[in-house]
Length: 252
Length: 247
Image 1 (cartoon, rainbow over the protein chains, first blue to last red):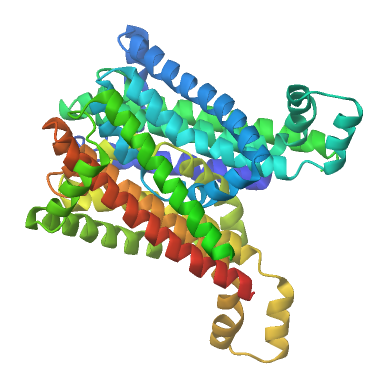
Image 2 (image 1 turned 90 degrees about the vertical axis):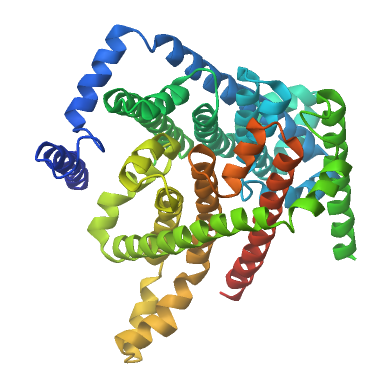
């Protein structure tokens, strides 16, 4: 590990240690934050007891569905829009403002239309995540060298074959940015939707534990979600680094 | 020529969205989603009412305080981590990791610390805005070419002159991008906060309307927020493009 890495680790350990100390000495009220060590033990108990297994499966299932739908549909939509320059020009201002407006405020509208099922959650998740993928696909396709498309024509590749064999790999770095964003937007939207209103799921569990003043359970669940999010982000980052290295032919 | 074409494009886009809305209305029925015309007449009736004004003022107040906090703290962290190399190297991955966490999970913690009133949603909004401002400011400061500082020294500029005439103009475009993103996410944070736990504010109004099955009100408030965010972003983007072009 580098010197910087060691300092970073020390900083993180010191921050957690300071929180632990502040909670233990009563500087921070136990009713506000519980010591990190208690969060961890509460999480271990909660996982061992199995009471949240169904909610974990439900929430992670919805998140995975949202991410897969967003990536696949977003890529497909990106291909279509890229092939129609006039449509794209019209949609450009829409894309530019999309993430500036709180799309999430339409979640209650979706509940009113579709009722309290996983359906509105999946829809708001896809609505949040898919545009990042579309934008990334358009960016990526813009940067596919013209000569590759000529090669495809020389080899008489069809539309689908061209997309899968040439455009997809050539645009890969940009697509990966889109995937990373889709994953994080999908995650946030699903948890937020469950949190605000949902019949079940981890977000709902946290909201319930908060309403019941059940701090041990609440902090255990929060810790669980933060750990999952950190692992997923770290894995994507590592993958990104590895691909970047391979693209540059092993050169740093 | 291009301006009229773009206006036509935008008009077509709006018409297409209205058509989708109408189709959804036909599918879902009037109680779930009112048609655009009904919503528009409700819009004209609701927006001038004192009840709407009170809620909008509550949101605007919370959002303004949150934005000032997010900008002040974000810029302070960004300047510190940009100017002090070691802090930046140590801190950047930590900031990036926190940035990509779903902050909504931490909202109960914020409520426990700051309480249910305006301070809770202000803190939650600021929490969203601080990180993009800090990260982009740090990036901007680090990207200052060293030759700028050398020429400032050659010209015997005082530290204040260096900051005002060299450093500030050099970092401004990118810092402004951070401020624009911070604006957006802070607004989202405040609204999410209001949706989950608040009695007053536009976010709370949407949730109330939903539980009372007043879909006209729900759509109206959503459209007001949508329009506000879109216009604000348009203005900020315009300034940003001008700043970037000047450099």
